[in-house]
Length: 62
Image 1 (tube, helix red, strand yellow):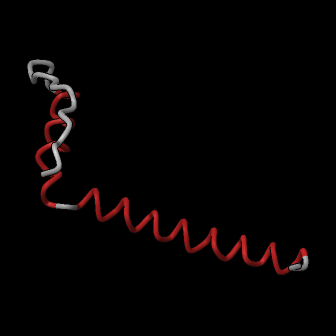
Image 2 (cartoon, rainbow, N blue to C red; image 1 turned 90 degrees about the horizontal axis):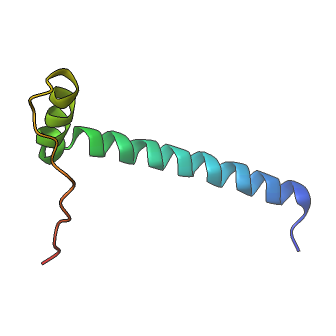
C-alpha cells in the first residue's frame, strides 16, 4: 500500500499535468479555424441585436 506522501505527490503531479493538458485543449479549440465562424457570430450577436441567434445544431457523425 502506498504511503500518504506518495499518494499526495501522485495526486498533485497528475493534477498539474491534467490542468496543463486541459488548458492546451481549450486554447487549441478556441483557435481552431473551423470554429471562427461560430465565435464571430456569437461576438456579433452581443453587439448587434439584428443578428439571428441560431440554436445549437447537433453534428451527425458519419
